[in-house]
Length: 346
Image 1 (spheres, rainbow, N blue to C red):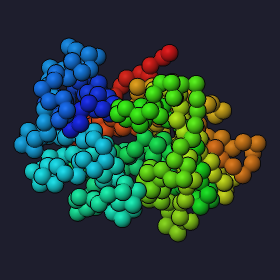
Image 2: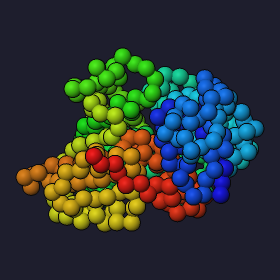
Image 3: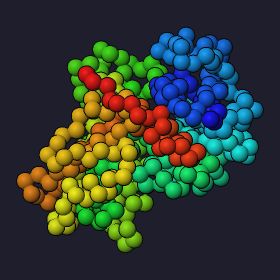
Protein backbone atom coordinates (compact mmCIF):
# COMPACT_ATOMS: atom_id res chain seq x y z
CA UNK A 1 0.00 0.00 0.00
CA UNK A 2 1.33 3.44 -0.94
CA UNK A 3 0.23 6.94 0.05
CA UNK A 4 -0.46 9.40 -2.75
CA UNK A 5 -1.19 13.09 -2.94
CA UNK A 6 -3.05 15.06 -5.59
CA UNK A 7 -2.23 18.70 -6.26
CA UNK A 8 -5.15 20.43 -7.91
CA UNK A 9 -8.02 18.16 -7.04
CA UNK A 10 -10.99 20.27 -8.10
CA UNK A 11 -10.74 20.00 -11.88
CA UNK A 12 -12.01 17.22 -14.11
CA UNK A 13 -8.70 15.35 -14.18
CA UNK A 14 -8.46 15.64 -10.39
CA UNK A 15 -11.87 14.12 -9.74
CA UNK A 16 -11.19 11.47 -12.38
CA UNK A 17 -8.02 10.54 -10.49
CA UNK A 18 -10.09 10.22 -7.31
CA UNK A 19 -12.71 8.07 -9.05
CA UNK A 20 -9.99 5.64 -10.10
CA UNK A 21 -7.80 5.73 -6.99
CA UNK A 22 -10.51 5.18 -4.36
CA UNK A 23 -10.95 1.67 -5.79
CA UNK A 24 -7.25 0.99 -6.30
CA UNK A 25 -6.21 -1.98 -4.13
CA UNK A 26 -2.71 -0.61 -3.45
CA UNK A 27 -3.36 3.11 -2.94
CA UNK A 28 -4.42 5.39 -0.09
CA UNK A 29 -5.21 8.97 -1.09
CA UNK A 30 -3.60 10.90 1.76
CA UNK A 31 -3.53 14.52 0.56
CA UNK A 32 -5.60 16.49 -1.91
CA UNK A 33 -5.02 20.19 -2.40
CA UNK A 34 -6.96 23.25 -3.49
CA UNK A 35 -6.30 26.79 -2.35
CA UNK A 36 -9.82 27.92 -3.25
CA UNK A 37 -11.55 25.00 -1.50
CA UNK A 38 -9.34 24.71 1.61
CA UNK A 39 -11.20 22.91 4.40
CA UNK A 40 -14.06 21.74 2.19
CA UNK A 41 -14.76 18.02 2.29
CA UNK A 42 -14.08 16.40 -1.06
CA UNK A 43 -17.42 14.58 -0.88
CA UNK A 44 -19.22 17.91 -0.43
CA UNK A 45 -17.79 19.24 -3.68
CA UNK A 46 -18.14 15.90 -5.45
CA UNK A 47 -21.08 13.97 -3.93
CA UNK A 48 -20.29 11.04 -6.24
CA UNK A 49 -17.43 10.27 -3.82
CA UNK A 50 -19.62 10.14 -0.69
CA UNK A 51 -18.80 6.98 1.22
CA UNK A 52 -15.58 6.49 -0.73
CA UNK A 53 -13.32 9.27 0.56
CA UNK A 54 -13.17 11.00 3.94
CA UNK A 55 -10.75 13.79 3.12
CA UNK A 56 -10.82 17.59 2.90
CA UNK A 57 -9.00 19.89 0.53
CA UNK A 58 -5.90 21.57 1.93
CA UNK A 59 -3.48 24.25 0.81
CA UNK A 60 -0.48 22.76 -1.04
CA UNK A 61 2.27 22.04 1.48
CA UNK A 62 5.63 20.57 0.51
CA UNK A 63 6.07 18.72 3.81
CA UNK A 64 2.65 17.04 3.58
CA UNK A 65 3.21 16.08 -0.03
CA UNK A 66 6.75 14.87 0.65
CA UNK A 67 5.31 12.40 3.16
CA UNK A 68 3.58 10.67 0.23
CA UNK A 69 5.16 7.98 -1.91
CA UNK A 70 3.82 9.56 -5.08
CA UNK A 71 2.24 12.88 -6.02
CA UNK A 72 0.02 13.68 -8.99
CA UNK A 73 -0.17 17.21 -10.37
CA UNK A 74 -3.58 17.80 -11.95
CA UNK A 75 -2.95 21.50 -12.45
CA UNK A 76 -2.85 24.02 -15.33
CA UNK A 77 0.48 24.42 -17.10
CA UNK A 78 3.07 26.41 -15.19
CA UNK A 79 1.82 25.45 -11.72
CA UNK A 80 3.76 22.22 -11.14
CA UNK A 81 7.07 23.96 -11.82
CA UNK A 82 6.90 25.92 -8.57
CA UNK A 83 6.88 22.87 -6.26
CA UNK A 84 8.58 20.29 -8.42
CA UNK A 85 12.23 20.97 -7.43
CA UNK A 86 11.46 20.59 -3.72
CA UNK A 87 9.56 17.34 -4.19
CA UNK A 88 12.20 15.85 -6.48
CA UNK A 89 14.95 16.82 -4.03
CA UNK A 90 13.10 14.97 -1.28
CA UNK A 91 12.80 11.81 -3.31
CA UNK A 92 9.06 11.89 -4.07
CA UNK A 93 7.99 10.22 -7.29
CA UNK A 94 5.83 12.58 -9.33
CA UNK A 95 3.36 12.16 -12.17
CA UNK A 96 2.53 15.48 -13.82
CA UNK A 97 -0.66 15.61 -15.88
CA UNK A 98 0.09 19.11 -17.14
CA UNK A 99 2.28 19.98 -20.11
CA UNK A 100 5.15 21.35 -18.01
CA UNK A 101 7.63 18.51 -18.60
CA UNK A 102 6.40 16.84 -21.80
CA UNK A 103 8.40 18.85 -24.33
CA UNK A 104 12.15 18.34 -24.11
CA UNK A 105 13.10 21.49 -26.05
CA UNK A 106 12.73 24.33 -23.55
CA UNK A 107 12.61 27.03 -26.23
CA UNK A 108 9.79 25.21 -28.01
CA UNK A 109 7.85 24.85 -24.74
CA UNK A 110 8.29 28.54 -23.91
CA UNK A 111 7.14 29.54 -27.40
CA UNK A 112 3.93 27.51 -27.28
CA UNK A 113 3.07 28.21 -23.63
CA UNK A 114 4.11 31.87 -23.71
CA UNK A 115 6.07 31.90 -20.46
CA UNK A 116 9.53 31.16 -19.12
CA UNK A 117 10.06 27.65 -17.78
CA UNK A 118 10.76 27.85 -14.04
CA UNK A 119 12.84 24.66 -13.70
CA UNK A 120 14.32 23.68 -17.06
CA UNK A 121 17.00 21.65 -15.28
CA UNK A 122 14.40 18.98 -14.46
CA UNK A 123 13.07 18.57 -18.01
CA UNK A 124 15.84 16.19 -19.18
CA UNK A 125 15.06 13.69 -16.42
CA UNK A 126 11.32 13.63 -17.13
CA UNK A 127 10.13 10.41 -18.76
CA UNK A 128 7.28 10.74 -21.24
CA UNK A 129 4.47 8.63 -19.80
CA UNK A 130 3.21 6.75 -22.85
CA UNK A 131 3.47 3.17 -21.56
CA UNK A 132 3.17 1.60 -25.00
CA UNK A 133 6.54 3.15 -25.86
CA UNK A 134 8.37 4.03 -22.64
CA UNK A 135 7.31 1.30 -20.21
CA UNK A 136 10.86 0.34 -19.20
CA UNK A 137 11.91 3.95 -18.57
CA UNK A 138 8.73 4.62 -16.57
CA UNK A 139 9.56 1.76 -14.18
CA UNK A 140 12.52 3.64 -12.68
CA UNK A 141 11.42 7.25 -13.32
CA UNK A 142 11.10 9.78 -10.55
CA UNK A 143 9.31 12.33 -12.74
CA UNK A 144 6.79 11.22 -15.37
CA UNK A 145 5.22 13.67 -17.81
CA UNK A 146 1.80 12.22 -18.57
CA UNK A 147 0.89 12.73 -22.25
CA UNK A 148 -1.92 14.98 -23.40
CA UNK A 149 -5.21 13.59 -24.69
CA UNK A 150 -4.85 14.46 -28.37
CA UNK A 151 -1.19 13.30 -28.36
CA UNK A 152 -2.17 9.93 -26.87
CA UNK A 153 -4.85 9.17 -29.46
CA UNK A 154 -2.72 10.44 -32.34
CA UNK A 155 0.55 8.75 -31.43
CA UNK A 156 -1.02 5.35 -30.75
CA UNK A 157 -2.62 5.51 -34.19
CA UNK A 158 0.51 6.51 -36.12
CA UNK A 159 3.17 4.54 -34.22
CA UNK A 160 3.05 1.20 -36.08
CA UNK A 161 3.33 3.01 -39.42
CA UNK A 162 6.24 5.24 -38.42
CA UNK A 163 8.15 2.60 -36.48
CA UNK A 164 8.23 0.52 -39.67
CA UNK A 165 8.83 3.45 -42.04
CA UNK A 166 5.76 2.61 -44.13
CA UNK A 167 4.46 6.12 -44.86
CA UNK A 168 5.62 9.50 -46.08
CA UNK A 169 6.32 10.97 -42.66
CA UNK A 170 6.58 14.51 -44.04
CA UNK A 171 2.85 14.62 -44.81
CA UNK A 172 0.85 13.31 -41.86
CA UNK A 173 -2.64 14.62 -41.08
CA UNK A 174 -4.66 14.32 -37.88
CA UNK A 175 -8.26 15.49 -37.64
CA UNK A 176 -9.18 14.98 -34.01
CA UNK A 177 -12.35 15.88 -32.13
CA UNK A 178 -12.79 16.17 -28.36
CA UNK A 179 -15.64 16.49 -25.93
CA UNK A 180 -16.03 19.76 -24.01
CA UNK A 181 -14.39 18.41 -20.83
CA UNK A 182 -11.06 18.62 -22.66
CA UNK A 183 -11.11 22.37 -22.08
CA UNK A 184 -11.18 21.93 -18.29
CA UNK A 185 -13.67 22.95 -15.62
CA UNK A 186 -13.23 26.71 -15.72
CA UNK A 187 -16.10 28.86 -16.96
CA UNK A 188 -15.82 29.96 -20.60
CA UNK A 189 -18.55 31.26 -22.86
CA UNK A 190 -17.39 28.99 -25.70
CA UNK A 191 -17.98 25.93 -23.50
CA UNK A 192 -21.52 26.75 -22.34
CA UNK A 193 -24.16 24.17 -23.21
CA UNK A 194 -25.97 26.58 -25.52
CA UNK A 195 -22.72 27.30 -27.37
CA UNK A 196 -21.58 23.68 -27.74
CA UNK A 197 -24.79 21.71 -28.15
CA UNK A 198 -26.05 20.96 -31.68
CA UNK A 199 -22.86 22.35 -33.21
CA UNK A 200 -19.46 21.17 -34.41
CA UNK A 201 -16.40 23.28 -35.06
CA UNK A 202 -12.67 23.24 -35.64
CA UNK A 203 -10.41 25.43 -33.52
CA UNK A 204 -6.72 26.34 -33.26
CA UNK A 205 -6.25 25.36 -36.89
CA UNK A 206 -3.32 27.76 -37.13
CA UNK A 207 -1.47 25.94 -34.35
CA UNK A 208 -2.34 24.00 -31.21
CA UNK A 209 -0.12 23.48 -28.16
CA UNK A 210 -0.29 19.72 -28.52
CA UNK A 211 1.33 19.82 -31.97
CA UNK A 212 4.98 19.99 -30.80
CA UNK A 213 4.33 17.25 -28.24
CA UNK A 214 2.85 14.97 -30.90
CA UNK A 215 5.63 15.63 -33.39
CA UNK A 216 8.26 15.00 -30.70
CA UNK A 217 6.73 11.60 -29.96
CA UNK A 218 6.31 10.64 -33.61
CA UNK A 219 9.90 11.56 -34.44
CA UNK A 220 11.23 9.56 -31.49
CA UNK A 221 9.47 6.49 -32.91
CA UNK A 222 11.11 6.74 -36.32
CA UNK A 223 14.08 4.59 -37.34
CA UNK A 224 17.41 6.28 -38.01
CA UNK A 225 17.57 7.99 -41.39
CA UNK A 226 13.81 8.30 -41.84
CA UNK A 227 12.32 11.53 -43.15
CA UNK A 228 11.40 13.71 -40.18
CA UNK A 229 7.75 13.43 -39.19
CA UNK A 230 5.67 16.54 -39.82
CA UNK A 231 2.02 16.77 -38.86
CA UNK A 232 -0.95 18.89 -39.89
CA UNK A 233 -3.10 18.81 -36.77
CA UNK A 234 -6.66 20.19 -36.70
CA UNK A 235 -8.60 19.80 -33.43
CA UNK A 236 -12.40 20.01 -33.27
CA UNK A 237 -14.96 20.44 -30.50
CA UNK A 238 -17.67 17.78 -30.24
CA UNK A 239 -21.08 18.50 -28.67
CA UNK A 240 -20.56 15.94 -25.90
CA UNK A 241 -18.86 15.81 -22.51
CA UNK A 242 -15.99 13.33 -22.86
CA UNK A 243 -14.22 11.37 -25.56
CA UNK A 244 -11.80 11.86 -28.45
CA UNK A 245 -12.07 10.57 -32.00
CA UNK A 246 -8.94 11.01 -34.12
CA UNK A 247 -8.96 10.32 -37.85
CA UNK A 248 -5.38 10.01 -39.08
CA UNK A 249 -4.18 10.10 -42.69
CA UNK A 250 -0.87 9.20 -44.33
CA UNK A 251 0.51 8.25 -47.73
CA UNK A 252 1.80 4.68 -47.96
CA UNK A 253 5.30 4.16 -49.33
CA UNK A 254 5.11 0.38 -49.00
CA UNK A 255 1.84 -1.35 -49.92
CA UNK A 256 3.16 -4.88 -49.45
CA UNK A 257 2.52 -4.91 -45.69
CA UNK A 258 -0.64 -6.34 -44.15
CA UNK A 259 -1.69 -3.30 -42.13
CA UNK A 260 -4.26 -5.15 -40.03
CA UNK A 261 -1.68 -7.76 -39.01
CA UNK A 262 0.89 -5.03 -38.35
CA UNK A 263 -1.38 -3.21 -35.89
CA UNK A 264 -2.55 -6.40 -34.22
CA UNK A 265 1.03 -7.57 -33.68
CA UNK A 266 2.23 -4.16 -32.42
CA UNK A 267 -0.42 -3.97 -29.71
CA UNK A 268 -0.96 -7.68 -28.98
CA UNK A 269 0.45 -7.40 -25.45
CA UNK A 270 -0.87 -3.95 -24.59
CA UNK A 271 -3.65 -4.13 -21.97
CA UNK A 272 -5.17 -0.80 -22.97
CA UNK A 273 -4.98 -0.81 -26.76
CA UNK A 274 -7.61 -2.76 -28.67
CA UNK A 275 -7.15 -3.21 -32.42
CA UNK A 276 -10.61 -3.89 -33.78
CA UNK A 277 -11.37 -6.45 -36.53
CA UNK A 278 -10.81 -5.30 -40.11
CA UNK A 279 -13.56 -3.01 -41.35
CA UNK A 280 -14.65 -1.85 -37.89
CA UNK A 281 -15.30 1.78 -37.00
CA UNK A 282 -14.56 2.55 -33.32
CA UNK A 283 -16.94 4.80 -31.41
CA UNK A 284 -16.17 7.06 -28.47
CA UNK A 285 -18.97 5.52 -26.43
CA UNK A 286 -17.12 2.17 -26.44
CA UNK A 287 -14.30 3.71 -24.36
CA UNK A 288 -16.26 6.16 -22.18
CA UNK A 289 -14.83 6.27 -18.63
CA UNK A 290 -12.35 3.51 -19.47
CA UNK A 291 -8.58 3.53 -20.00
CA UNK A 292 -8.88 1.82 -23.38
CA UNK A 293 -7.77 3.08 -26.79
CA UNK A 294 -9.55 1.39 -29.69
CA UNK A 295 -8.03 1.48 -33.16
CA UNK A 296 -8.99 0.55 -36.70
CA UNK A 297 -6.83 0.76 -39.81
CA UNK A 298 -8.02 1.14 -43.41
CA UNK A 299 -6.53 1.29 -46.90
CA UNK A 300 -9.51 2.83 -48.74
CA UNK A 301 -10.08 1.57 -52.29
CA UNK A 302 -6.66 -0.09 -52.14
CA UNK A 303 -5.17 3.37 -52.75
CA UNK A 304 -1.91 4.87 -51.54
CA UNK A 305 -3.70 6.23 -48.47
CA UNK A 306 -3.86 4.71 -45.03
CA UNK A 307 -6.51 5.89 -42.59
CA UNK A 308 -6.36 5.09 -38.88
CA UNK A 309 -9.29 5.66 -36.53
CA UNK A 310 -8.41 6.11 -32.86
CA UNK A 311 -10.80 6.65 -29.95
CA UNK A 312 -10.10 7.28 -26.27
CA UNK A 313 -11.76 8.93 -23.28
CA UNK A 314 -9.89 12.22 -22.95
CA UNK A 315 -10.16 12.20 -19.14
CA UNK A 316 -9.11 8.56 -18.68
CA UNK A 317 -6.62 7.18 -21.20
CA UNK A 318 -6.08 10.81 -22.25
CA UNK A 319 -5.20 11.96 -18.72
CA UNK A 320 -5.99 10.45 -15.32
CA UNK A 321 -6.29 6.79 -16.31
CA UNK A 322 -2.97 6.93 -18.08
CA UNK A 323 -1.51 8.64 -15.00
CA UNK A 324 -2.68 5.72 -12.84
CA UNK A 325 -1.30 3.30 -15.42
CA UNK A 326 2.05 5.04 -15.02
CA UNK A 327 1.77 4.83 -11.24
CA UNK A 328 1.22 1.09 -11.48
CA UNK A 329 4.29 0.65 -13.65
CA UNK A 330 6.45 2.86 -11.39
CA UNK A 331 5.57 0.90 -8.24
CA UNK A 332 5.51 -2.58 -9.73
CA UNK A 333 1.76 -3.09 -9.35
CA UNK A 334 -0.35 -4.98 -11.86
CA UNK A 335 -0.59 -2.51 -14.74
CA UNK A 336 -4.37 -2.81 -14.85
CA UNK A 337 -4.86 -2.23 -11.11
CA UNK A 338 -7.69 0.23 -10.52
CA UNK A 339 -8.29 0.47 -14.26
CA UNK A 340 -10.47 -2.53 -15.05
CA UNK A 341 -13.62 -0.48 -15.58
CA UNK A 342 -15.80 -1.46 -18.50
CA UNK A 343 -16.85 1.46 -20.69
CA UNK A 344 -20.24 3.00 -19.84
CA UNK A 345 -23.11 2.17 -22.19
CA UNK A 346 -25.38 3.72 -23.22
